[in-house]
Length: 236
Image (cartoon, rainbow, N blue to C red; front, side, top):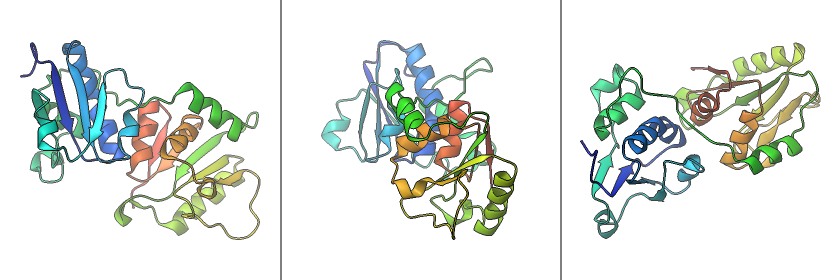
C-alpha cells in the first residue's frame, strides 16, 4: 500500500540478528518496487550490523525511536510481535508475515532468499586467521543460543563432534568468549573459537568459509542459509 510517492519508510524491529536476516527479502522487494524511496531500519544497538553492505538498506537507526525522529519518516512499518503474539505465525513463514504487515506484495515468483553479505575484507581476514587445510572438510558449529530450549544438549553435541573429528572433518566451535571449555588435549582439527573473542560479523565470516554449518535455532543458522552454506538445524 506504500508504493508510489513515498520518499522514506522506516521498518521497526528490535532484533535479534536472525529476525532481521529474515526481514531482508521484504526490504529488498520493497526497494525493487520503490527504487526512489529511502529505506531505514530501526533496531536495537548491535543488531543493525547484520544489515551492513545490503544495497537496499539506506539507513540503520537505534530502536526505540524518539517521537521527533519518527515524524521524519512518511511511513512506519512496525513488525514487533509479528511472531510473538500472532496465531498466524504458526502457519505462515516469518518472512511472508513481515511482507504482509508491511504491505509488500509477495507472489510465487518473489525471491524469498534471505541475504547477508560478508565484506571482501572480512573474507580475507577469515582466510588469514583460519587457513584451509587442503582437502579437509570444515564444519562450523554454533554451540549455544539465546534460550535454553534452543540449545542442543551438550553431551549429544559432544558425540557429534567426536564422530566428525574421527571422520576427518575440521570442526570450528563458535560461541561467546569463554562459552565453550574443552577438556584436556584436543586434536589439531578441533578449534574452539570462543577463546578468540570474535565479533558477530567475524563469526559470520567463519561460517561463510565452512563446507557445512550445524547449530540451534539461532542467528548463525539463518546467516548460513543466507550465505548458501549447507546447514543443519539442531533442535533441543
